[in-house]
Length: 241
Image 1 (cartoon, rainbow, N blue to C red):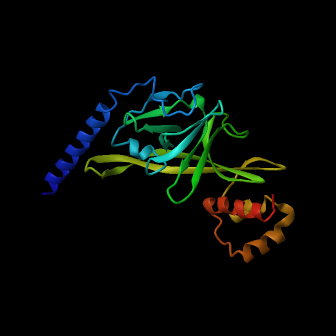
Image 2 (cartoon, rainbow, N blue to C red; image 1 turned 120 degrees about the horizontal axis):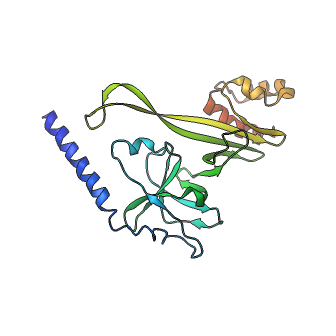
């Protein structure tokens, strides 16, 4: 019974795979920018080849979301569902008009926003900050005020012991999310925000006593990498930057 269920699931996935590729046949690749709100500039890109076994692991977000693409020309392009491919550092768009996916030409993208149902929006910008590799990458804007906090998100493929994946096949790959935070503020060059209480204290060497009082007041005990990222926003609101 279990074997029959496995074969049935594999058959469904194969059918979906062939169907996904078949739906791309009528995709007018020179015209998938029809949803753009400007006639002066058209968004371009290349076909996104969907692999049902690996592609879902490349996406940072679990689902397609409504969003807006900001081009380097200053245009705002709407009408596409978006997902961030953190494995290849690419923006992938879904065109409902032709039921097709494409990788947006990164040379045209200045940034993009994603709308989270019931939870506001998130912003990504294409940047090449000083102190990084120099290559332009997409960074998530975690906080922007008197301080700017950016996050470089990467999905890394690692080798593991053999295990059965979701469709019952043997696999030896694992996909891990890695985040690196970068902080910039007045009088502070771009620097990596490390985890730990010491990393926060070193941002304000003349105000350590004040900081300790701040931590006690707000019962702050967690200084992990993600918690420090949240803490930057609280410190900015309190006038530390």
